[in-house]
Image (cartoon, rainbow, N blue to C red; front, side, top):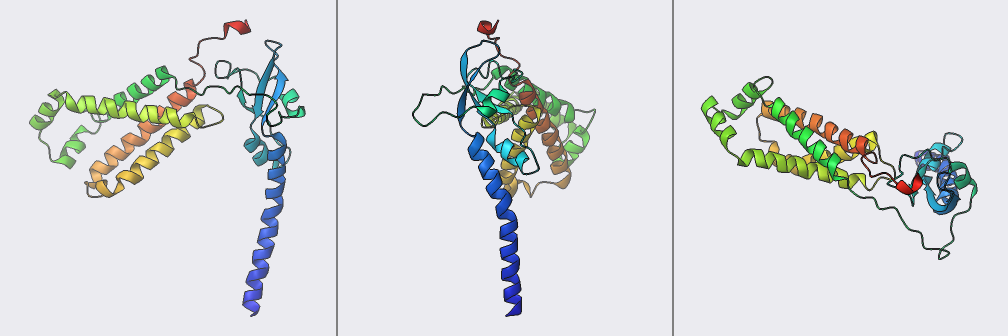
Length: 248
């Protein structure tokens, strides 16, 4: 009985300890969520911006909330602006439901970073499986002779398949990137790692029977290629954009 009372007391205390910061974080989130009107410092026109309320709530648990924008009607063309309207956004009230129709920024996929990332992944794979690095161990793991590898290299289908896989993965990372409120190097790497982990989990039953040396070679390559794809797509996001001529 005393043990049960102790467990209930521990559960109650833990709930109270977790409940207070949760309520405080929710209060911050509710206060700063939703689009709100500000005057753009560049155009001196009215625009709609959205504060990253999740980030504000998370940082507010450690002290003063850290504010940043997560959306603007002038994005993505001006996604790298200085966010000089942030102070006005923090002190302005959000739109009420039905007050005005808020045009949302189109979070599109930029094809040039995707193509560059896919090429980088393919090129890393070509170097990784070359004679300068791991071709010998790769051949031994698959029990292939040099003549068989030479014939395999002469076929078009393996090269086309590898290019298609790199393109498909890069576009998958770019699609995941559109779900983030902010874009950048680390968001791109996170998107790539999440997609890589999902593919690994799905393919796990069929790859466990492969030779251990082959698994090590391919796993190492895919990790390096994944980071490269995410870094390129995330790092170039918003930079390879046609300039907004109206802002000049």
